[in-house]
Image 1 (cartoon, rainbow, N blue to C red):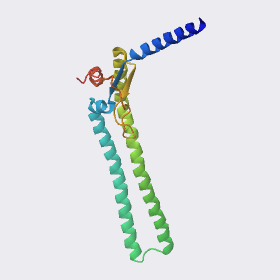
Image 2 (tube, helix red, strand yellow):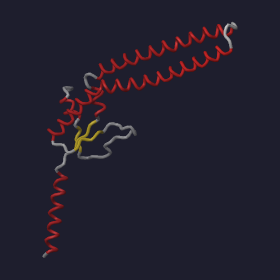
Image 3 (cartoon, one colour):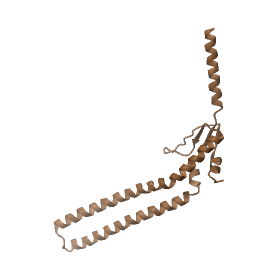
Image 4 (cartoon, rainbow, N blue to C red):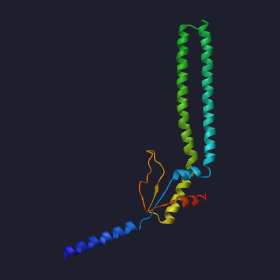
Length: 176
């Protein structure tokens, strides 16, 4: 009797567990493609390009000044107007300035990435809110990312019963 009761409880548990699995609804989308087509991305790209260009101009001006100073020094040095001690000091100064230019170039990369994140943050938040709304309204258990990850592979490898929720997300964003 006890054994029959245990088996009945086990079957009831399995029935509940499998009925919960069949009721789940899955969706997928490529958020990168949606983000790239969102209004505001073009403006962000333009602003980012202008910011990057302004930083590059500063670097180019510094490099041109370094080149000009070096050429002037070489004229004096070749003319015999610079002592050996002064030449060594100037060489150290030029090496330091050259190193500062390399550091500035690396800083440009960091600054541009930070600015990109700042410019895109509101758009990413808006996209996430639209995905959340579609997920709740559509009764989705999970919505998977199908865009390429850092490894180059999609986060969704297989899902035959997954719906593409790109269109409703774009509709929430006012894009369609």
